[in-house]
Amino acid sequence: MEQAPARDAAAPPPPYAPAPPPYPARSHPARPYAAAPRTGARPGPGRDERRAPAAEPRVPEQGRGESVRTVRPPDEQARGEHTHSEPPAPAEVPAPRTVQRHSVRGQVLQALRTALVDGELVPGEVYSAPVLAVRFGVSATPVREAMQRLTAEGAVEVVPNRGFRVAVRSPRELAELAEVRALIEIPVMLRLARTVPARRWAELRPLAEATAAAAAIGDRARYAESDRAFHRAMLSLSGNDQLVAVADDLHRRSQWPLTGAPVTRRAELVADAAEHQALLEALVAQDLTVVRALIREHFTGSADA
Image (tube, rainbow, N blue to C red):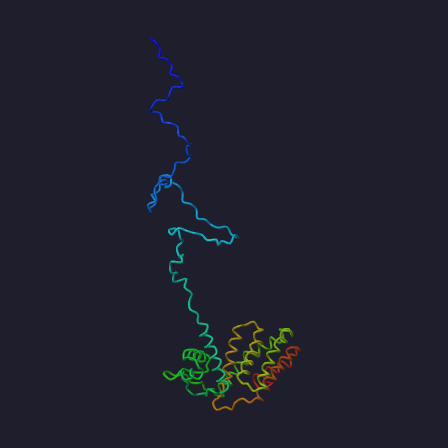
């Protein structure tokens, strides 16, 4: 049996063999829409594109004039966040401020206290909030709020459907207030005179000088404020805030004028301010005998009380 002759190596390939490409093959298949004509609509992604992970958002580097901003897909936004196209949540809207209204109320309150000390608001008379508002050039609301504060302090009382009546101070009531003040302040002051160093008392000299300055010009409202400030400063050295608050409230109540009483004369204010300065100098000098006599005379009018 004869063997078939060997096929020549240079023989042409069979007709079914694919011809080699005239250019190198790509490492990745071309995107199916690379050669698609521009029709206005982009073809859908191919298989490789569907499997490819989503590209990370670009975050500019700091220091190159670009602002750093994190971009999140809409479905990954944290709950409670909002974009510029969405209205903010109600909890993020700041509450309206009422600083100006409180400032007006404070000014009206101070003006009413001055009118009470000066006797412009007569004890026993009834004043309506609208009338006082016209006097001060404000609305009736801050006047009512200030009057409610004065009601808590005992300076006025509410008269339904009419307004506020200025409280009537009797001599007995003022004597009782003075007695309670003496029971509270005298023991505390005597204890402080033995424990507080002289340099701390010397720091209160400007307050004593303020009372003397107000008394010299006969400014009763200014003297009332400086007088309470001086006593508050002395009692605050005890470190007892409740004591200071109670004593200051009693002091304020004792400053309202009596019904039909004559207006405090400037000489009386000057004498009272002189007692402040003498007491302070005795405290600085640590002279307990003089301190004891001045404190009791200041509160009770008698050095032997």
